[in-house]
Length: 132
Image (cartoon, rainbow, N blue to C red; front, side):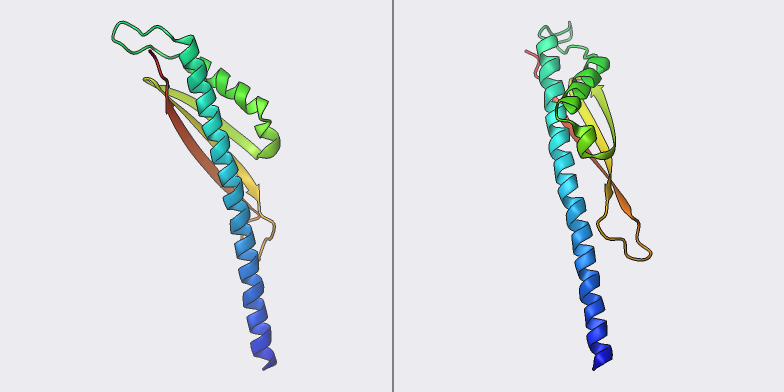
């Protein structure tokens, strides 16, 4: 009976550890998604204000450097580097679409033997620049 109780206790503790680690990754990923959405909207709205006049073919040629600058300003404004460990980001422009990619590390609360102590997470958000 003692072996059975010890075995069940070990399984329950392992389940608690796994659920806690997965929950932490999920919550940080959700926050990273919201930050990426905000950054891409800030870049798209900023570019729309800059490029109010379309080019000859009907689509303006968007400057990727402007998109990166606007994204960096937003990330500084919301203090993203303080909220996410090892934050890495990029902003790209394809036609009239701005894409922001964010990647970060999540330190896991528990580290069972054989499991990593951190998890890599990444997200991507895109927005079409409304050129009128």
